[in-house]
Length: 230
Image 1 (cartoon, one colour):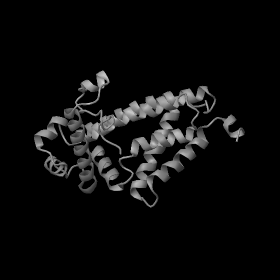
Image 2 (image 1 turned 135 degrees about the vertical axis):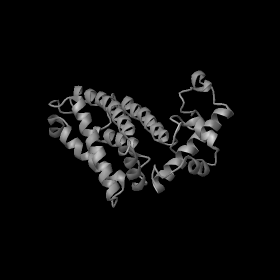
Image 3 (image 1 turned 180 degrees about the horizontal axis):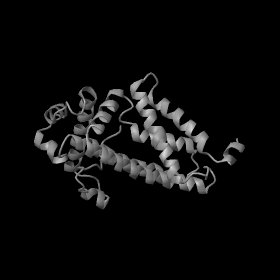
Image 4 (image 1 turned 90 degrees about the vertical axis):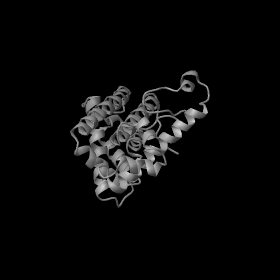
C-alpha cells in the first residue's frame, strides 16, 4: 500500500528534513520512528480525503486532526499549514520520479511503458477521485505562491524526465529533431491535459486514459527506425 512518508513504511520519518538514524546506519527503525511514520501517513491521508470532499479552502486543520485522530500540536509538528500537506506530496513525487528514471535510463523497458509508469507516479493519489483533482487544482490556481511552487515542481520534474529522454535519444529510440527538454515538455502537457479532462468527465478510469496518452505520445516521439522495426 502506498504511503506518504517518502520511504517504505518501516523507514519513513518526518517531512521536516530530519533523517532518522536508522536510515543513516542501515539498522531497523525503532518504535519512535515507526510511530512518526504512521502518524504522518494518517495525517496526509486524512487531509487528502477532506480536500476531496470539501475542497482545500473549506477544510480546517482541526477537521484534519479529528479525521486523523491526532492533536493540533501533532499536526504542526509535521506541517506549518494545511497547504504544506500538498507540498509534501509533491516532494515525495519527485523522489518517486527519480526512482523510475534511474531504473529506466539503462533498461530495455519499452518507452511507452516507462511514460505510463511516470504518469501513474505523478497522479496516483488522484486516480480514485476526480473531485480531489479539481479541488487541488482550484487551491493551486487561487494562490500565487502555490502557483509558483507548482511551476517550480514542474520544472524539477521536467529536468529529470529530460535526462531519460536524452538517454533514450542516444540509444536511437526517440526522434532527435526535438531536444530532450522539448520532449519532456510534451510529456507534461499531455499528462496535465489528460488529467484535467478526466477530472471534468471521468467516464473512463484515469489509468486507462493515461495508457492511451502514453501510447499516443510514443507514436509521435519515437524515432523513425522504431517505426520500421515493427
